[in-house]
Structures are given as C-alpha cells and as structure tokens.
Amino acid sequence: MNAPVLVLKDSLKRESGTKVHHGNIQASKAVADIIRTTLGPRSMLKMLLDAGGGIVVTNDGNAILRELDVAHPAAKSMIELSRTQDEEVGDGTTSVIVLAGEMLHVAEAFIEKSYHPTVICRAYNKALEDAIAVLDKIAMTIDVNDRGTVLGLVKSCIGTKFTSQFGDLIADLAIDATTTVGVDLGQGLREVDIKKYIKVEKVPGGQLEDSKVLKGVMFNKDVVAPGKMKRKIVNPRIILLDCPLEYKKGENQTNAELVREEDWEILLKLEEEYIENICVQILKFKPDLVITEKGLSDLACHYFSKAGVSAIRRLRKTDNNRIAKACGAVIVNRPDELQESDVGTGAGLFEVKKIGDDFFAFVVDCKEPKACTVLLRGPSKDLLNEVERNLQDAMSVSRNIIKNPKLVPGGGATELTVSATLKQKSATIEGIEKWPYEAAAIAFEAIPRTLAQNCGVNVIRTMTALQGKHANGENAWTGIDGNTGAIADMKESKIWDAYNVKAQTFKTAIEAACMLLRIDDIVSGIKKKQAPGAGPSKPTIETEGDADNEQILPD
Image (cartoon, rainbow, N blue to C red; front, side, top):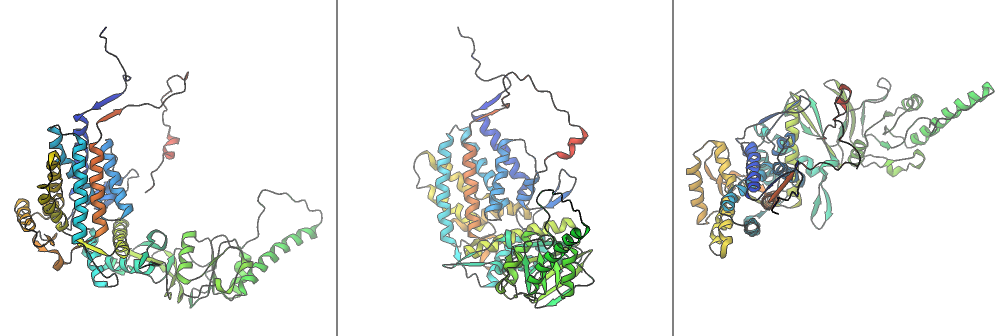
C-alpha cells in the first residue's frame, strides 16, 4: 500500500529547500570573490586565457566575467548582472557584483534561522527604496559645461582602471569624444550615441601619449590609384555614394549570343558610356573626393584621376555614416539624384597618412563634426584592448553625466551614508522585517570595506572610524581615499561617481539578490524530448573537420 511513488525520472536531480539557498549563496559569493580584488584604484589585474589561446589582461568586472565559463546556474545570473550594468550605464560593473554577493551573504544567517525568503526580500526592497531616497538627498547637480568638474568625475571613474597612470589622458579623450557627438534633443536633454558615432581605432606602435580625438574621422583605406590621385586636399568637397561605379552585371547569369563582331564592340562601348555617364554626373559638382561603399571600376578611376578627383572605394557603411556626420554630406544612392546640398564641405583637410604598416585616410578639421574617431596608439595589442575598454567606460560615464548631471560622492562615502541612514531607520521598522533590513544596511559597507582591503590598510580600524564619522551624519562626503587608504573628504579629493551609475548599481544588486533568494528548487538533468520511436541517438564523435565549425561566442 505504502509503496513510494516516483514522480520524477531517475535521471533528474532535484534539490530543494535550504540546500538550494545555500548553494546559490555560495556560488554568488564565489563569483563576487573572483572580482573583489579589482575594485578601487589599487586594484589587481586578472589575466584570462580565452578559448583561442589569446590572453585578456583586464580589471574591468564585465570583461572578466564575460570570459568565464560557469557551471552553476546562480553564478550565471550573477554574471548577467554585470553585463546589464555595462550595457545600461557602462560603469560600476565590479561594485554591482560585490554588492549583490554581500547582500546574499548577510541573508544566509536569516535562512539558517528559517526566515522565509519573501520576508527577507520585502525588507531588502524597502531598504532599496530608502537607499535611493538617500542618494537623491546627497546628490549634487553640476554644470555639464564646466570642464573641470566633469574631468574630475571621469578621472575618478577610471582612476580604478589600469590607465589611471596616464593621468588625464583617457579622461580628456573621453570627454572630447562625447561632447563632440552630443546631439541636443531640446528641453535641455542631450543624446550621445557612443556606438554609432564614436569609432575607436587601435593602431599598435607609438606611445599612449600620441592618442588623440580627431576633429573628424579616419578609416583604414587608401585612395584607389595612389600614384595619380591627390593624397592631401585642403577644404575638400566630399561626395558620399552608396552605389557601385562600375557596369552593372545581370542579377542572374545571362548568356547573349552575338553573331556579328560589331555588336560585341557596341556592347563594350555601351558599358564604357554608362560608366562615363555616371562619372560626368558626379564631376558636375566639382568634388575633390568621392567615396563609395561599393566597387569602382578601372575606367571610372581613370575618369576621376583625369579630373583630379581622389576616390576611395568599398568603405564600411558605418564609416560612411560617420563621415557624413562629420563633414555634413548626405549619402546618395544614385548618382543622377545628386544635389548641391549633398556635397559635404565641412571638412578642413583630407589626407592619407601611413601609420605603422597601413595607410589611413583622415577627414579632419571639420567645422562642427557630429562624429569622431578616437585614435589610440600604444606598444602592444593587449594594452590597446585594455585602454579601449577603459575608454568605453570613461565615455559611458561622461555620457551619463551629459544626460543626468548629478553627482554622488565616491570612495565608498555614498555606501556608508546609505548604510548609516538605513541603520537609524531600522529602529522605526516594526515586526520581523527589521533584522533583514538592518542586515541590508550593513551589506552596503561591503564596498568601502573592499576598497580598504585593496589598499592594504587595517580594515577594522578604518571601517570603525568611518562608521563613527557617518553615524552622527555630519558629513556625507567622508570616504576612503583609494590610493592611500586614508580617510578623506571626497569633495576635496574630487572623487565622485555619477548618480545614475550608483542608483543602477543598487537597484541591480538588490533585485538580483532577491531573485536568487526566491529560488527554492533546482531541477537539473532535463533532457530534450526525443521524437517517439526514435531510439537513443548515437553520440556524435567530433571529427577534425567539425572542430572549426564550433560556434565562437561574439564579444
């Protein structure tokens, strides 16, 4: 009568209850510990070997976690966090993981005392609301056009990165680039599209100090006929095309039988006339530079060089868009639809230079460029990649500031203020939620504590001193100077964070912690359903031929 009932298949593994909670918390803490040492200006670098045998040396939280292959499902969702953070605000990828790990760590004690996870989550969400309120209170608005303030902010953002040793260099590059491409949307809003209009060209060689933001664009192309065409044109008139300047081939293969030899000559002549016709239409506008995204035949090239026009062919579409934005040209799809207004006259100089081994074409000194190229130079590929990652972060930060010009103190000061305020508030909370709420308050101290650890100062002393300073709430700007580990006023040290980066960090971390706490069952080993009647499929043995076809994950 009392035979056990099998509900799940034997092959399924099911863990439930507190075991799952502990497992998830352990996994999240493990992920947090991986990148804990990369927080702050005294951070360590991580070296990762990827599948292709290449190396990545970085301390950007997101870049590290992106390369990791993780088996545990909870750890995977932690990694997603830093990706969200990177896509949303571009900075704070490390802090979000450290904070989420800490939130889960303090929740562990409550789960052992058999608190219900929803109670903990409720308390956490309450803490989140209050934390954002505190942020609003201590945030200070700045003037976006005040270069010094923005520079201080971007510097403190990339002060934690590898390139901080080059001082203001990267910060300057980032601010220049983002202010160039900013577009006013009206109502004081500005939109900065980093992905589309800022291109980072990495050219190995030279020194990092040679890096600069061009007042225009550059691309890795040379003119079509280097000997005949000019490689340097001052105030060029630029025409951008999106059509091939060669004879159109048939869409599908066509066979034409010609009986008389003259017909063949007529055919060839028609082709030549067609091309000549296009070229004449273009040359009517007296351009100095014709750039097309498609092909350009020898004949067209001949007509252009005869007229003294430089031509560049097969340019990437994205590059073409950038040139259009920079010099004010319009990309034209058919040569017979050209108008005077489509010619770009905004550029001050077109020049082809040789950098390293490659030729690069520069369209620079534009009057009001709305697109730009950041030229990065440096000794090695790995270094350039790291600089590019840092530059991305710096540009995101300056974009955030242009969008939402509010600052909060950095150096762990914000977290300490939030923590102190929440601790005081926890006294007013009634019922069982008071304890998890207080724990969440303590969890915020993870960030300043990690900063102190990474500086190598006495953590306990520093933390108690800081907590004492914040407990009476006199100065919300007291934090840790990440380089020395001394307690300092963040306003004087100019260590700031962008408001929306901090807000996003808190939100993402707490919401993720709640999500992981709510999981109470993990069923693994679920197989894909096979079609009925299909026997067990043979294991596929990978032959050498398939090895190349493995899907390589995109960056």
